[in-house]
Image (cartoon, rainbow, N blue to C red; front, side, top):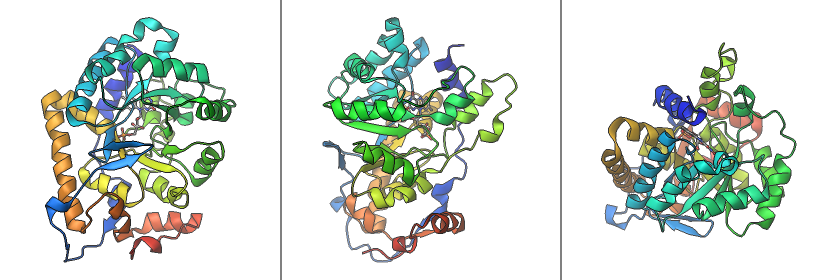
Length: 347
Ligand SMILES: Cc1cc2nc3c(=O)[nH]c(=O)nc-3n(C[C@H](O)[C@H](O)[C@H](O)COP(=O)(O)O)c2cc1C
């Protein structure tokens, strides 16, 4: 089976909406909301774009016939809902132009929407330009996937040029760039390094949802690296790691978002918007296009309700919600010198 098809099928097979670190974050309930639901505005803005909802469809696929069909449907969903969307890694089509249509279909279905083209950090500025041109991208996502490459039997083994490539791309592209993880999360050191080379936006993409070490390990004959299946930091931990950089860099979050409440938690921890892959793929493959659109619209309604419950009229106001972190998260914060008390009583 084609690797991209295997990724889709394994991501679907392994998709679980089990407990994850979003459950370790609790809002403090206050009895007076002080606002009405029709005053709530769930829109968000970052990197010069504005969206009516604070969540987006994150990078997934392209590069096979099945991927083309999925990208067509994802393009339709993005058009219908006005969501931002990212392609899967365009590397395959840069190497083999006959695969271009499997990515271009997303633009065809969503001619005026915001589409981010996705490539890996091992690719050059010229490759970035090719990827953007291919889908008429409004921005570029560069993914960091070290654990995935190492577990992937045919994966990369040379990683020394990543920072140089990213620095060259951010210095020379005219469109916004997001550097993202793929479900392993980011540390404050990673964010600081990216900031120092001119990166303006990161998607911390943490663990708790799709695991690419689990997926790649399942593709190995002996599956001998399964001890890496849950490698990395969760999305919540990665957001905590990002807190002291949030005034200098736009932080997006993804990884393990199962329900609308998870989105509100990520926004309250400082994310400007929240990416979803596994849960949307699972909806689409299980329930089809129309139900997936309805599912997204239902999340928008739920967000309206949750902002009201928290007494917050806007997405930016969520930064003043009162949050309690449970013991594992506190242990992480204490070990890393992150002040967790700041979340419990915010003004
Ligand atoms: C089938 C599938 C393929 C993916 N392919 C890519 C990719 O090509 N490039 C990328 O940056 N991330 C890719 N991702 C990772 C997601 O963008 C996201 O970072 C990760 O899945 C965590 O989010 P989730 O838990 O909501 O799935 C893929 C995810 C899935 C489910």
